[in-house]
Image (cartoon, rainbow, N blue to C red):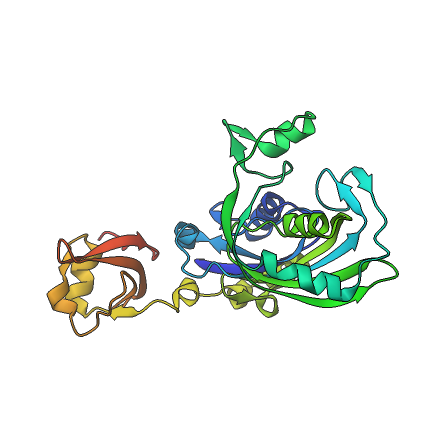
Length: 304
């Protein structure tokens, strides 16, 4: 079994918990995930199975979409409602117009300081480990990209609302909400988070644990597996003939002149072989004038 199974992660599970649960259901060890989700969050968690695990670090589409609920008037140590409340403020004067006016500063390429309760490492220590010891350390701001933020609901009396956020990798949604609260002068905490798209894979392609368990019991797990090439569909494709495929799979570098009719200005390509189908990704090395293997994502040929 090689490919991707999209899990609709339930609340309370870490991403590592999801891998452990699936190992028990699938009876497989070789599993990995992309796009870690906090235990509080639910939604799309792509799980890579078999040889597809080698694709986790090279996915060309890092876009993610979140639906985030928030409450104004509080600041917590975790930046969400599961943490200890550090400050409380009156937010009754905050209007929808004020909220909408504050949002543009969090769109585009922005600098974001990772929260203390995060998996970021500083001097070899995870920030959340230090936070649990009551320690706070200086963190460097990171450049992240937020494509769009939409205010989809707001109750001024309750000081609660919902944002839909389209962003790239590395964005902490609860930090956006925390920083929004600081900009408004009243504080804010995240009260709920659901990821509805990750790496181009929508929530509609997700399965619950119960559904995966049922498919396994009926010997129908293949129905849940997304071919790995689907997450590389945005890359230009190179299709090799049978002879080129044999050379490529044996590690022989192919000259770019052999592929000139298929090349674009791109550096990264999805490579398909004859008759093997999707082989993996490759880079066009124009200095050496060859096609360089980036990652093989297909099952190795069995030796005779």
